[in-house]
Each structure stands twice: as structure tokens, then as C-alpha cells.
Length: 395
Image 1: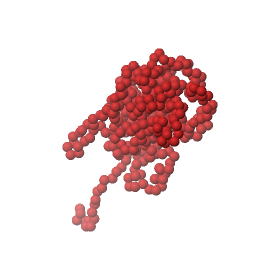
Image 2: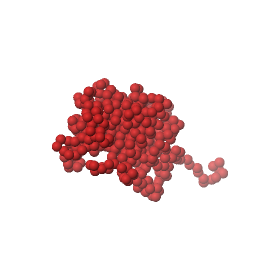
Image 3: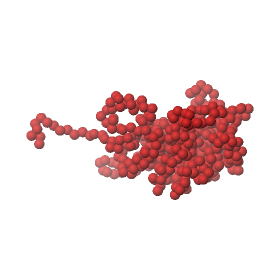
Image 4: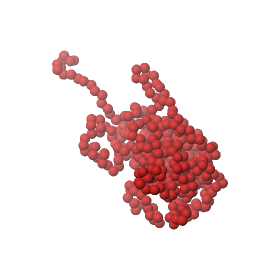
């Protein structure tokens, strides 16, 4: 009908639209089209909490199964250029909705670090059965009055390696870290990906921090103290990890020390021919771990979700076995003899809740991490989220 409207020309242009709004905003539109299964999974996981990062990985292939960053934002605001007011609101919000938590958020790993410290000890000939300690509720360095307290006043009585993981005995890991020394400890856990980028196929990944005496001297112009080593054993101090690093390390443990590069893209399609090219999994490291060491740590993690473990609620009536570790990471320090009281602390200064797991424990198909900012205890705040994600994939 061009002759009927002389001088009028109609031109078409591509217009980007995000029909699901905030859902998956940190990745949707950058890695490919979202399908119904992806949408269902995102809806199931992003509705679970307000401030969190979560990653789930197939330990055998490295494929990303779940990726959640909350709070989120609506990417439609950026389609035609965001206005000043909306940009300011997003950029200055204390909730940091633009923050891509799974790959950029860094947190002390807390007690989720303990299985890897345990492996470091066992592989270096320390703490193998029948070794056990009598835990009185605190650990002290020689010639020091300072007490590094266990989370349980009065302690846990007799504790071996398996029990130390199951009940998350701080005292056991204080002593183990000290005996290992920071050099041996840092070198060992670095093979699980701590302190370095995983190489995932999206931009912006944070490398986290695996501290060493050299790093502290360079960064803070201070000496490394034995106390720094002691608290590293329970994932506190200078150590920082991303949710992705925790999930990747857990997947590597579940895969008996074989580290597979995590990735979103599973295939590439030739737009001209329609032919698909599968993405070949990349083995990043193969850590030589003895079956005996792995068995002790895995049995300790399995017992975490059984009666008496710190996440027995997560394993209850699951229909499959779950190997896990809970974690609670301090945001601010408290005085030597003071008791932690969450209700008396500003919400943004409360402890973070962490949880790592893989399942089924005897044939892992999913390994994951969940971090709930200022959520408190990992077993009660982060664990139920992990359970819902695992249920989605396994049932």
C-alpha cells in the first residue's frame, strides 16, 4: 500500500524485551533463551528468600543447574536507556540489586570450610582415626590467656574427625589449622578453587581471597599471627569465598577430587546449518585424595543431615541421602566474653547463614551452595532453601 501513503516509510527494528522481569535478571538475556524448565526452576528458587546467592552444579559435568541472585532488578529498565532516577535508586540502594551475588559476592565461608580443612589434615597425616580430642569448649595458644571459643559452651566432650564435621566442632579445627600451618592449609585448599576464579562462562567473577602471610604483609603491612591461622581453620578471618566457589569446591569433593570447569553453555548451534556442537567438559584439576580420607569426610558430611547433625531438619524425610555442611559467618566481631545476641544487633550486621551439600550422597547429581545474608544459622536459614532446590532436581 505504499502508493496510498506517498512519503511514508515503515521500518522495523529489533526490540529487546525481558518478559519475566526480575526473574533471572543477572543472567537472562546474556546466555540464551530461557525455557519452561528454566523458568520453573527460577521461580521456585528466587521466591525462597530476599537476600541470597545460590549456585547448583552437576559435579560430573560442571553444568550450572541453579543460579540465583537476590535482590534483583528489572532489566527492562535498561532497554531504551535507564533514566537518572531509576539508575540512582538501583545504584545507591543498600540492598545492592545490581550485585551479582553468586559470582561477585564474597563472604567468609564459616564452617562450610571445615570439610576442606579436614581433608588437608588427613592428607597430611594429621587427625586420622583413632585420633580424638577432649573438647572443653575453647582452644588456647601456648602462653596465651585468649580463648578461641567453640560455638557450644562447655564443648562436645570426645571428638574425632568424623564427629567434628557432623557437629561442627570449632575447637577441633582450631587445633588442626594451627598444626597444619597456614602455608600447607592454603596450598591444599587452593586445589579446590579457593582464592581463584573458576573460569565460568560469564563476566565479572570475583576471585575471593585465600590469605597468606605474604598477602597480609603486602596488603596490611602487618605480620601474620598464629591466631590468624587458628581462625582460618573455621573459615573466619581473612578468607573470602563466592557462592560459586563454594559450590564448585563442593562439586569437586563430591567428584572425589576431580574439578570440572563450571559452565552455563551446554551446546553451540550453527545458525546457518542448525547443527549443534556439544561443549566438552574441561577437567581443571585432579586432586590425589586417598579413599580413606574421602570416606571419613563424606561420612561426616552425611551425618550432618541425620539425627544429631547440625542440619538434621534438612535430611528429614528426603527420600534420598544428602551430604552437607552448615556454616555461620560473622559479619562483625564480638568481645572475648560477650555473647552473640542477634536481636540486639543491626540486621545488616548479623551473621550470614551458609550451607553446602551434594546429593544423592552415594551418586552425586547435584552439588550446591546457599548463602543467606544476615540469615543466622546455616541449618535453619540456608539449609531449607538447599533442600527445596535438591527436591526440584531429584524428585
